[in-house]
Image 1 (cartoon, rainbow, N blue to C red):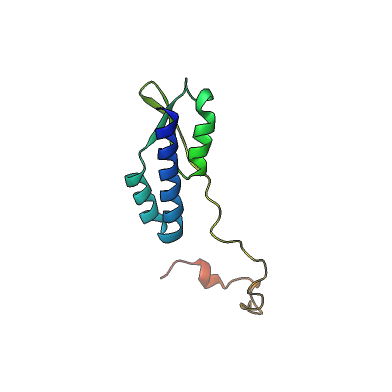
Image 2 (tube, rainbow, N blue to C red; image 1 turned 90 degrees about the vertical axis):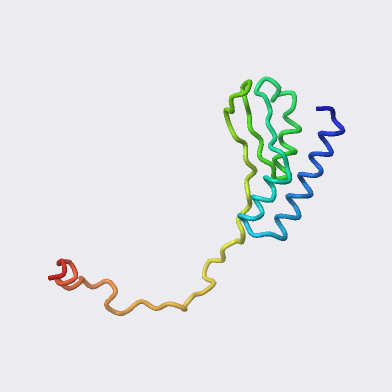
Length: 114
């Protein structure tokens, strides 16, 4: 693949990934990406010379399959950032433990129903 079509495919993949990430829920987003962006495969022998292209595809949110001949060996997937950061102590005091929380349970609790 010459550089111009490869860059055009990369730009299309980046556009689809960006729009899908902002507008669609997870499953629908992934399905749309699979339909609109062709699967990118890189032969293991060509991988060192195409590493910049592989990283650019991953940054655009596209999966890359490493192959040896026709046999798939590995799938490289982009890392997705967490949806939101968790805030420690955000709901402090919202839940209360009962006074007898750490007391031993009644014997009936451990016996099977009669």
